[in-house]
Length: 329
Image (tube, rainbow, N blue to C red; front, side, top):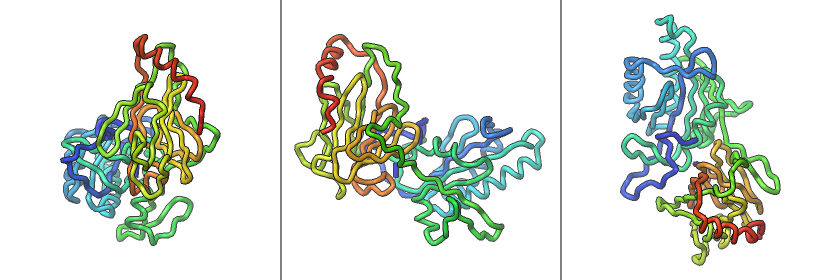
């Protein structure tokens, strides 16, 4: 699979000497007085949370404020942990007047991650904070990969499944990526239209753990299976010449030119389906040629695109590139 990035959610490529692990990631927040007010638990209360994570052989990652992040090797144990965390919140509410309005919500996904010290890296976890906002306060949601891994036989009713647990029925919400919005040109990346003259985007790509800086003069930059492509991507659903990176009006774009299409995960956590279309690359995200990120068996390209001042020489290079950029192939 392919959360809007904070410290633990990096789009940087993972180092080759780090071990990739398969498991569940829980992201959650503790709230007071509604969804807009995160509340930090006391150090003693967080110690209790950390012990709960440790009991299921998980790893706890320090988060700011009232947030929680944990990696749990067993997906079913991760869902059970979410249930116990909700019980813990109810206990705090009954014991402390300070916490009488305390609530929480959690979201859990399943896939490959790399744990590097106190950081959790992958090409799918960086959308969890954005997707958490879709979860009702007091509830738990899971991504499709976790549902398929553990609860594939359970019927889904209105984007929910019900578990008949010993402690009572448990409702899990199913949250998925949006793959809608098909226009001639897709702008799901919160495009900044206020960039002044002399301020252009700087694009950094990472594929198979290898970083690459894309310059304006590199564009158009072909992507595909063919060895002549500037970026060679592996995958059975990829075309020999699948797409390209191009540059126009101070922005980089990914352009799909393939038969099977491409999927782009934007900085706001939405996965957009592209077919002979282009998308502006803004902030941190990922490009999955030929298949959705959750189903991708080949390469996923991670990108980080931010505005930066360019020199007069670079501005001249940018201007020289402009006539080429409206071609969609």
